[in-house]
Length: 141
Image 1 (cartoon, rainbow, N blue to C red):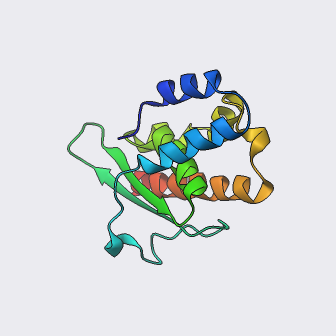
Image 2 (tube, one colour):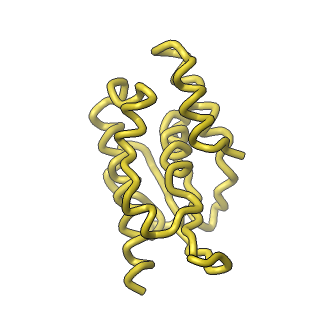
């Protein structure tokens, strides 16, 4: 189970730059819930990532207002960690709250933004864009 974003931010703040941060990122990726193989579909695939990435959004209407539940995975351990961060920032929020999430502001706050290659940054942007588009789709429906 993933810790709350406040805990993740605190943990990143106490880690030295470099290898410790990547190890923690990998640890977060390992904490992602299992992603069933039947969800590894083209519909759930996130395009724009160097690695293979899948994200499944579901609107949980048992809450008022309804909230987005997210699952995700990748074939890369570091990318799974990035997915874990992106998921933690968005999961369980209303579609309206998701529209206000700025992933890169948090990445900058925890000191990860400067360490992402341009390809990984593009992948993070693609993941966040996908989640924001899913949230907008649920708002429109």
